[in-house]
Image (cartoon, rainbow, N blue to C red; front, side):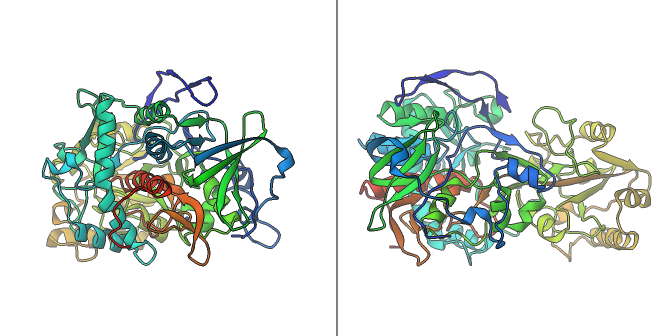
Length: 598
């Protein structure tokens, strides 16, 4: 997954060379106080690390950026630190726009701002710009419509609102993304074409899949309308991450923004938002590499694109306690909710609930630790990620196993005490399952008998002559598992899943020894949920009113998802985050965009 080749670039801000961080792909396969104060916070940064934390021990939490609760029981991050006095500020910089975070959302915002002549400064906590993720996403752009890949607006909005628990998700935000994503993608494509690169819609690629999304594949879940909106960054030959084309697209964005006049400040975390007497956000105080404070006055606006809060375990679990069951954290350790905290400390409101960007079938050992035996990028056990019989630790069936992409993570986190489940199959599996996209090897798994045998040899998967031996080894309750196993085979014999309505193509009896079982957990790359905002991407206070001059986008912003990342909308996190950061700059500069609902 990692390109070890490094290059250097010249930054316009300080005239020094900085290293371009290793290009990672698939990392994406991959939300109170009112005091005017600041704290040591920061911006989205490049190098995600797998913390692989099994428990939230105090020392692990501290290492991940968390803090102990106050004596009153209130989480420490809700208490605003003391303001930074003017006497400690060594330099003041005047500009039009300050963007906090040079990640996948801050970069297109910087591009647009600089392209339109704004004096823009980008503050970044990390030593370089953010890593290039899997894709972007959008609807009915020129490159999609010319291939007849069009999407119905009503169908998308109503379906996504329903599956993401629309009681929290702002339905009008879905329309805002839908209407403006096409123009955003068209603009982005023109920039990348100018640089010698292409954008390719995933839906135009034959047999391509994201693991277990099942879109247009035999045995896919019929429960939800799926939207394959991903758009990949490709080189001049049309190669993208899955076909050998390692396009460092965030680097291309940073270069373009710099060429247009944007100034980037790396290793320079934002530490305090500045308000004037009227309550307008007028700038940011940052800390440079020498631990000195610099104030950036933003005449037009401040945009927060600092990333998510997964690396602050206390904050993450405050907004979603079930995410504490995650075992495999492939997170950016700089993403400690910095932008959200800065907003909270000046009176901004937060989403009441955050969801995780989850991968549902990460292999786990019997003792709850992660395997160390996988080759390359694989972290799913072979076949264990396919829609076979799935049970919890007691042996009870959990779900329709062919739910798309992220969905299997939800019942594992909400309906089990440990966030884990087991997949069970027999030795005749290959002749029983539907062929096609599900069987394609990808960066998460290799679904072959050879891979199964390798996993058995390494203690990741277990093989038994009888189903009774399997149940005993896995620690299932004897009666619960026996009843679940019999019920499943009876439903398979009847040809219809009357409990969960899994597609009949996957309803094949488990009856041919030897039998296999493999345990898996959910993996998380980030949280979705943050500062509440309106249809102009302006951050809202606790009365629902915009804080003048303050904007948020990407995982720093809320008001988009409910407590479920919608698994039927591929690439929605990056896609809507980038588009909304782009729209925030348009609003700051008084540029026009589509406002269908206001």
